[in-house]
Image (cartoon, rainbow, N blue to C red; front, top):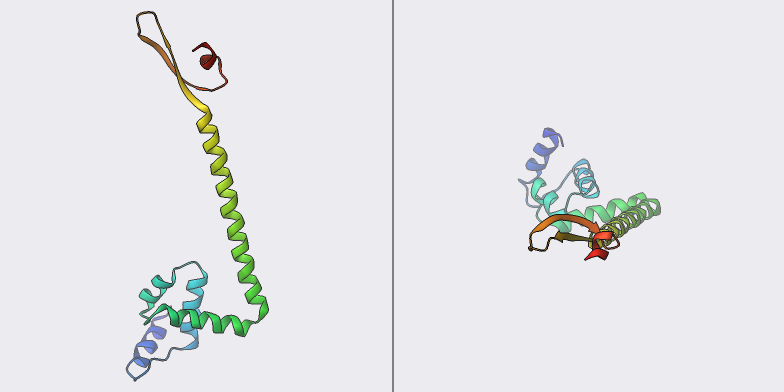
Length: 128
């Protein structure tokens, strides 16, 4: 955000009610859409609350029409699918790690000769 824009916002704060330039509002909403949390945008830009930011977002989406609303819904859907894929991959990895067991070969004196990480279906498991 340009220094000129920030100065104009500070100048607008001197009056009773703050008003923000359109460019400032667009940049704030864009930060929100880029993945920043509403609270971080509010703190970074010195806004009074996140309600103002969400109102700007709602107004901008209404101006853009149904295409912007459907695009936002599509982005959410894609993020959900990505999260579900990541979850499934982690579940499969956890199942594979749970299949692995430690097995050891112990001689008649009780001394451990070898320790290995093996699958449940390996010879080490069957010998035990």
